[in-house]
Image (cartoon, rainbow, N blue to C red):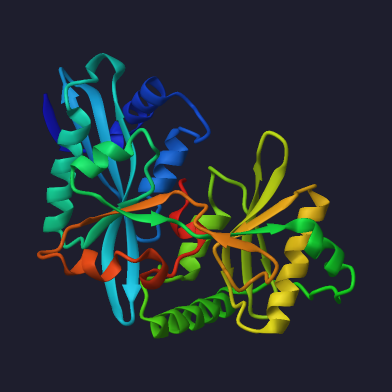
Length: 313
C-alpha cells in the first residue's frame, strides 16, 4: 500500500469509493460535489491523501482549507471532512495512517489547527489522535409562531439586491466588528458567500438582502416538523435591521410551515431558548506548545461563529 497526495484525475475513483464505503446517506456524493468542496473553495484547495494498492484507491482523507481570524491575525486551518476506506480493507488502520500523515503535511505548510464536528461513532478515533473536545455548539431555538404573529404588525422590510461592491463593504464592516471582540471568527467576503451559499450543489440556501444586511437560510426536515436554520446573518447590528430580518425569517417560516427557527446569533430573537444544543466541536492544535488550545478551549468565550461556519456539508 502506498499513500500519496490526491490528484484531480483521482476524483471519479474517490467518489466511487465514498459511495461504496458510506452510501449516499444525507450528503450528496458526486464529482461535482467533490470539486465544489475541494477545488472551488474560496479559501483554497483541500489537502487530499489517498491510499492505493495495486493501482486501486482503497482509502481517502480530505482536509478542507479554512480561515479563522482573531483581531488582525489570520490562522490557516483545515476542516477534517471526507474520509473513507474500502469495505474490503477496513480494520487495517488506513483511516489513522491517512489522517496522521495529513496532519504532518499541513503542519509543515503552516496550518495552525484542525477542527470538525465528528459524530459519536467517529469521535473516539479523533480523540485518540489528539483532538480535544471544545464542547457543544450553542444554538438559539425559537418557536416560529411567536414571530409569525408579530410579523403581521411590522412594516414589510424593503428587500434590495446588493451588488458585489455593497456586499464586500458589508463583509468588511462585519469583519471589523468581529476583530474588536477578540474572538476567533471566519472572515467573510463576497467570494466566500458566493461559494458557500449561492453556488452550493449540496444544499439549497435562500438568500435575502436588504438595507445593508445579508441573510442565508434553509429548511431542515424532521420526522414530524420542519425547521428554518439560519446559516448566516450579516449586518443585524441595530433594532431596526433585526426587526426587518425577523420579519423575513418569520414570513419564510410561515410560508413553508416551519415550526422552529434555529440560529447561533443569540441577539437576533429575544424570545428563544439558548443552550448547547449543537454538535461537539473538536480541535487539533498543530502549533508548537499548547497556547492555542489554552486560548481557545472555551468555545463560548473565545469563538464567534455562525451555523454556516461549523455545520457539516
